[in-house]
Image 1 (cartoon, one colour):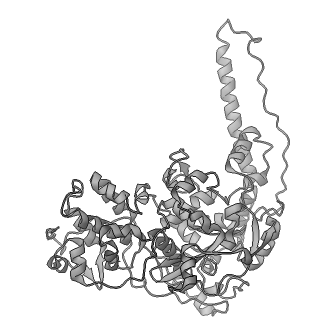
Image 2 (image 1 turned 180 degrees about the vertical axis):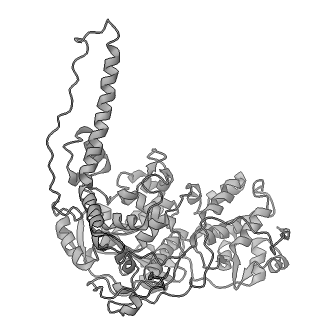
Image 3 (image 1 turned 45 degrees about the vertical axis):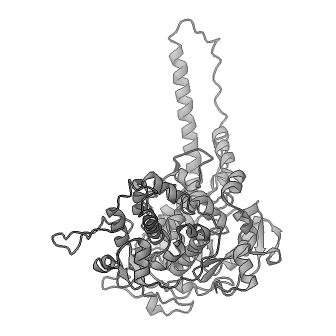
Amino acid sequence: MVRPKRAKTRGSSSARPEQDEDYVPPTDVEDQPIEGSCAGASSSGAGATTSRGRRPSGSDPVVSGIPDTPLLRCLGGHISAICRTQERSPITGWRCSWKPVLTFYQRASPALRDALGRTPLGPFLTIPRIQSDRRLVAALCERWFGETNTFHFPCCELAITPLDFVMLTGIPIAGEVIPPLSVIPMDRAAALMGVSLETMIADSGWEAGKVKLSWLASILEATAISVIDLNSLAFTSVLRVFLLFILGSCFFMTDRSCVETSFLPLMDPIDRFDTFDWGGAIYASILAGLRRVSRGGGRSVRFFYHFLEMWAHEYLDPFCPSLKVSDVTSFPRSSRWSAPSSKVDSHLLDKAREELDRLTLRRVSRYLALTTVVLYPLSFSYSLLRIQVTLQPFSDFDDMIQLHCRGVRRFMGRRVAFSYFGVCEYFLGERVLHQSDGEFRIPLAPPLEMTLALDCDTFMEGMRTAGVPIHHLVGEVVTHSFYLSWFRGVSIGPIMRPFSTRPEATEVGGKLVEKYFQMRPLLAILEEDNRALIEENAHLRGRCATFEDPSITFEVIPPYQCRPRPDVSFEFDVDLAQDDDED
C-alpha cells in the first residue's frame, strides 16, 4: 500500500485533515504534574491569584486545612479540593477523538466493516457517538479516589465495575494479558502498515517510536477504504492501520496526539489481535487515567472519558437522557440513549457538582417509581421522588449478560487485578457488593498499593484471570442506615459550600437557592399533579365533544370520577439534602 504525498497548500507546509471537535492541542503545561499537597498544604499555594484576583486557569488543586479521613489521605492535594472552593476545573486537555473513528468506520467497505466487527472492538464501533458534556466528566473526576478505585458520593461508594464496562462498550474482557510493550524499529512499523520507509520519513509521521494520528488519518483518507475488498493485497495493512488508529484515538492517547507503534506486533499476523484481552487493558486504562487526573498527575484527560457519561446515564438519574431505542435487547446498552437532551445538555460545572453533592439512594425500581407517579400522583411521597442512584442498572438482563459478557459477572464478588501494559489496577469487589446484590456490607481497608507491577507468579496470574475471593474482606450484611453512618466517617460526603457563603453570592440570593433545593420534592409532585390535570382536562374535552350527538345521553356516559386528592404537608425546615436513615 503506497500512499501519495500530501499536496502543498498556500500558507501551510502540508494539508491537514479536518480537526476533530474533541481534540485539544497540547499546551506547555500538559505534562507538568500538579504538585499535590496533604492536609497541611501552605496557604500561599491555595491562595495564589492573578493580578485581577482570580486564580489562574489550571492552577494546582491545593487547599489547606482539609482533614484526612481514615480512608482517604492528602485531600488538600486531591482534585476535589477545587470543588470545595468552587474554582474552575484544572483539566485543560481532552485527548479522546471518537468522531473521526466513527466517520472512517461509516465510510468503510462492507468487507472492512465486517473484518473490524469480528475483532473485540467490533461492538464498540456500533455505538452512536455521544456529544460529550465535559463539565459532567470533570465533576465526576472530582469524586474519584484512587485509594479505592471508586466514586465517593454522599449516599454510598460506587465503582466502574467490569460488568459495567462490557455492558456499555461491548468490548469483552477475555483473552491473553497484553504484555509490556517495547519499541519496534521504524522500518518494521512501516512494513506492517504497508507504507514505504521513505514515505514515513518524508511525511514526518514517525516520532520517537510513535506515529502521529493525523498521519494515520491521512493514510486512511488516501486509501479507497469505501471499496477495498477482502482479496486486495493491501487489505491486511489497511486493517492494521485502522485498528492502530482506533487504539490511539479512543483508548491509549498521548499528549502529542500520537500512538505507540508497539501495538503493531500484536497484530502480526492479524488474527493475533483477537487473542489479547483488549477489554481488560482499556478498562485498566480508565482506572489509571482517573487516578492520574484526580491526584494531579497531569492536566489532560488521556483515557476514553466518554465512558464516564455512559456510566452516569445508567447509575445517576440527574444525568439520564432520553431513550432513543426502547428495545431491551439493544447491545451495547449505551447505544440506546439519545444524548444530549434537556437533562444533560450544557451542564454548568457548578450545577453538575451540585447534583453529585446531593445524590441520594434509589429505594425502588424505576418501573415501580414511574407506576406510582402515574397511579397516585398526589399521594406520592417526596422521599420516593428523591431517587437518584440506581445500584443495579443491569439486574433485569441476565440473558444478555450470559450471552455477551463471557463470565465477567463473576468478577463482581472478587478482588481482581487488570493489566495496563505492565502495570495492574485493582477492582475491589468487596467495596461495592451492593452493586451486585443490593446488600450493604462494611469492607476492610483496601490494599496500601493500588498499582502493582506485572509479575508472572502464580498468585498474580490468578488475580488477573479470575481474581481472589473476598469473603474474608467484608463483614455481615447491614442496613443502609448503618452503612451510611460508617461511610460518612471514612469518606468526604457533601463538599460544596452553602450557597450563601460562596464567592460572588449574596446572602439573600444564596438562601433563595438553598430554599429552592429544599422545595424541589414538592415542585416535582406539583409537576406530576399538573400533568394529571392536563390529561383529565383532555379527557373531559373529549366527553364534551360527544354531547353534540343527540343519540348520546347522560345515562350512556357515566360520570367521570376524579382522583382523590389527599392533603400533603411538607416540613421545609428539614434538611432534605441528607439521606433518610430509614430503610
